Image (tube, rainbow, N blue to C red; front, side):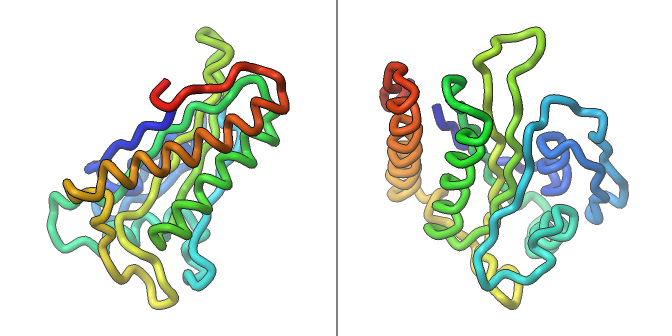
Length: 188
């Protein structure tokens, strides 16, 4: 399953829990510390090839995204939640998540911050998932340039999300086919 959410909290605050890090939010003037969070298998940032070097620094990325907004109530991040197949290895889950992040970068020109989580000790052991945060602005050599509205527009948003979902499910089905498990259907 792939689910897209909009996040209106400060961008740094949205990124911190999933990544399990300590980040200073310049907008709020305080730090958020989630270094004790467990179950994080991997974190990484994918950005356009022409992006500035600071885009690979989680704190710099999200504080810059926040600073690019002109309205106090602007949406600064989009979150995609990916259900990852438990039938494949951690490396394969990482591979499929990275491919999804790279597709977001190629398609929309945004920066993507990924946190892959293991299933919870007390819960369903098949609940491997990833939190995929994207900026709402295109990132180019000079920094954030153009707001990406295609996902928010009534005419294009649903179509774009459906296409991203279909591409993700095609990738997961290929991995699962090699693991000889039932294929997932779109929407499940």
